[in-house]
Amino acid sequence: MKVAIKTKTFVNKKNVLHQALYKLTEPIDGYSEVVVSAVHKPKLGIHETFIFPYENGDAFMEALSGSTQGIFNHEEVLSSLGYEVIEEREVQ
Image (cartoon, helix red, strand yellow):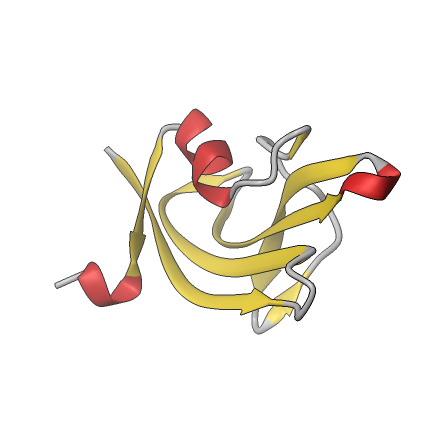
C-alpha cells in the first residue's frame, strides 16, 4: 500500500486555506515530497485540493496528477490516488 506521511500542517486563521507537507512512499509524477493545498471559498464557488511538487525546501506552482476541483479534503484526494494518509508521529 502507498503511504502519504503528513509532516507539517499550515492553516490560515479564517480556515479558508489548509496546506500540508507529505512524504510519499511512491512518487506522484516523480516527486516523493509534495505540498497538498486545499482552498474553500464558498462565496466564490471555490472548493479545490491541489498537489504541488516540493524540493529542497520550496514548493512549485505546478499542479500534479490527482489535483481536484470540487473537493476540500487532503485525505480524500490522496486516498483517490491509492495513498493511506498517516501523521509523522505514527511512523515507527
